[in-house]
Amino acid sequence: MTTDQILRTDKLGRVVTSRQRRAELLAQYDQSGMNGKRFAEWLGMNYQTFEGWLYDRRKKAREAVAIKPAPPAEPVRWLEAVVKNDAAAKPEPKTQNGLVVRGPGGLWLEITSEEQIRLAALFWNELGKARTC
Image 1: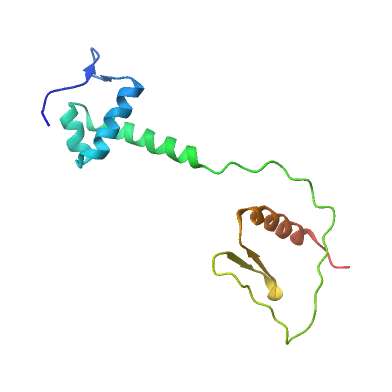
Image 2: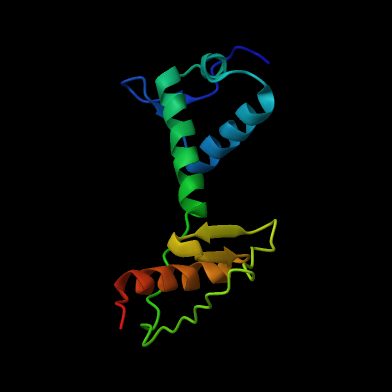
């Protein structure tokens, strides 16, 4: 790598580059093996500016994978629970690849897929609203 300055600057010394060129430079940085400060020096730019580019890229990547809230579901109209008082029959969760949510009195929910998460949340919410007869 040479030490020639490869970026244009304006009258105030700020780096002027297109989004495409910025993406190319960040890809070069990823493959360079240099730390951010050294790469910014190699480019001939302020380290804080380069760090801002990295921050913006990380922020956009996080926003791209952010979980969007599910659309409002139809409200639950009723909830029924059958409770057996059988001390000998205590089922336990069967999964090793899921999520088990335990509640009071031995209550547990076994969640093994993403589709079940919304249903479990609705159930837990309605359970909190339920009153005994």
